[in-house]
Image (cartoon, rainbow, N blue to C red; front, side, top):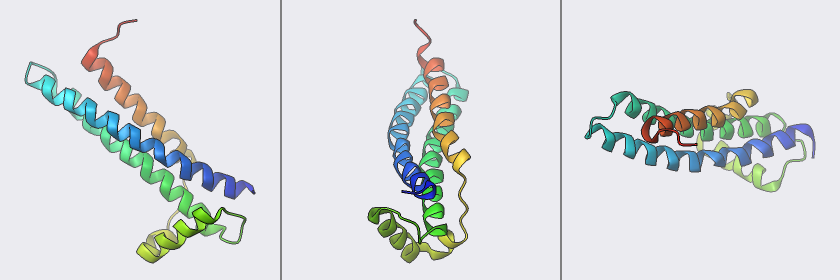
Length: 130
């Protein structure tokens, strides 16, 4: 497998980090909203919403990067599952894939940023006990 294929596969796998981040973000947001009723900060609710949004962005940017790299190098040795997914995406929204751009550095950083924001929310909600 070439470098482009390895990058596409890496981002196709990394996008699924967004699912548990979304779950943890929703749970933290729920705690933040319930804390408001007992005197908690609305800033924590806003940060919780931001953390949820970034978890969705983590999925999206990694998915878009995987599809853009696969589309740009269709003749390379990609796994059949990735090529099948590319075909489905082209059938669904061809313009988004054709005009999409790979952003691998942003895609690698986005899950880390989302997790960092969620950790900050958790610290604001529950404090730190080491």
